[in-house]
Image (cartoon, rainbow, N blue to C red; front, side, top):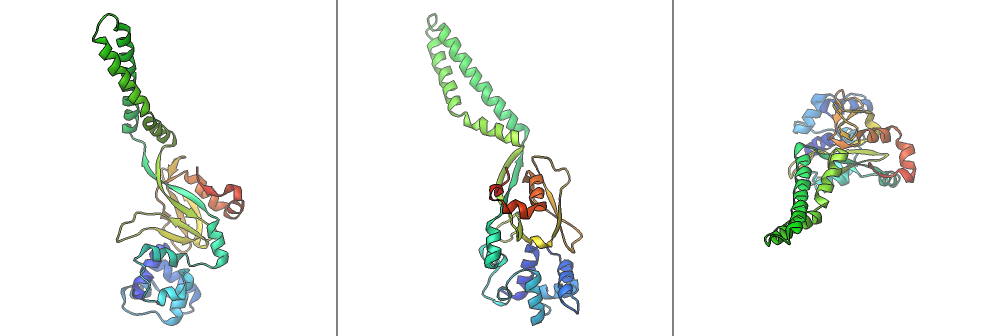
Length: 268
């Protein structure tokens, strides 16, 4: 893979705009790097000099070899993850001590309530039918079939009781969740939409994060988090996650939280 493509992929994975990357490179390069220069590098109009590549390695927090080795294909998600987590032994220990947050998958809808109501209505009808049929069993022969069918319906619904229970739990916590993201002492992994061609997962070094805030319309049980990066005016907005306030709390108390083994794990 060409260096130009690598710069673009890693820049996006770290959450930098072209201007933001240029500003950060300018801090370690006495000549300064403009947004246009970064654009030229990514479009292959010109190649960065060796000292620029070293600066890119430092600012993007990847190894020097990862940028220069053309055999490394960052379109492979596994390879990209490996490059973005190419850490020292000390840093790897910190990464292993991490906090996992859960991605919010869907909101509770009217259909969830309807499913619960319909389920228990059918079970109630089955129970009543069975009771009435048993009461009439000595008077009407057909009542035996009524009792049998009603009891069978009630029994089947009782066997399926786990379905409405799971929906009730979903309603109580405000929705469901799917994948996990992580926050460690070195990186914050922001999970985004992905497919075979494109991965919007962002790996942000914690040192680049200035603060986190609740997103607009966030609720106690779920919502988005705004992540403000140094030298980037517009914050990165996470996907909806479970208990966003807990993620912000962990970030604000990162060292003490992750240092305590009793606090490790996922958000509840």
